[in-house]
Length: 452
Image (cartoon, rainbow, N blue to C red):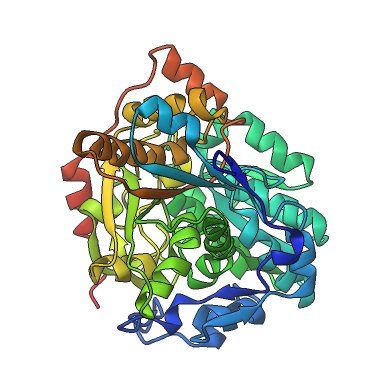
């Protein structure tokens, strides 16, 4: 069909394994270090936080890791997700570019995050864990883990960054509907949270603070483990079902991407769609341009330093070599809460350092404008995070129009904005402003990087 819009895979085509890019890296990742000894961590160092199944995946060098049957059964509720050809958007832009998007908003929780919350809940349940603590920014990850906790009979406690806790009440209600407890961070539940509040009683929080609280809570209870929604190797691994499906669907469309775009906060949805294609390129297949898009108010890849840093503000987590703005950096309260993290996934950071991906940063007003332009053409209101990817796609398509060049562009529409309407209300009402990051704040946070 020359005008096909939607490319669907049957449930039988759901990937049977996750793809691990560590097997194809031209240079290995720098080791993760113990926060106390500064020596490389081993499985026993991670055992207080993660189940063994997750630890094995975090450290694995195997290219393909089998997806357990119970996880595939849960995935089948919404996977394989659809791939769309954005024909109406192409016509509206008058561009010769072909634009495709993989739509992860069809998951029960509304985003790509369920691709990792389901397996993490499975591995914890299999080892007898009763409770999981975590953090969330915009609420997409907290919602997904709340869903997974209900499926695998786990208690879920979510420390939600305070500014998002108040901005997004329907995300809180979603988590609570599935039985999770949602706590604004910083809180009085932890020693670290209390110390932050003592210094700043009006603190709006950050993902680094929320992670510190969740890790402290998990480390202090035998029946509790911690789960992270981005950044770590095993999280990015779980997301590769996105790109693997997209490869088959692009073949159905008789096309192959020249450029792949995704927003980046911690790196999970970017890795999910890019890594399978990039891995094929690293093994001698077609080359691609990969574009990671972030907010100017938290410019981890574009202005951060590639160095060892803590994953949390409390300095309880191991040290990872990554692009970072400094663990004490506190982004302002712009609406794309899922992109307000001081660090970038080590795998994504490593590949950026090696020159395999490009990075761009945009202000929130131009991203909301791009998101609404997309919505009016395609009928889907994107999450504020995903509007950053859309802005880059529009820029790429405009270059094709001006140059009269054809290009195939694929992007990850990582979630819908149905619970983010207050953000759109504020934008349409002229209440939003751009919140570019302060160079002085970044410099101060970077000055506190650990000596390794």
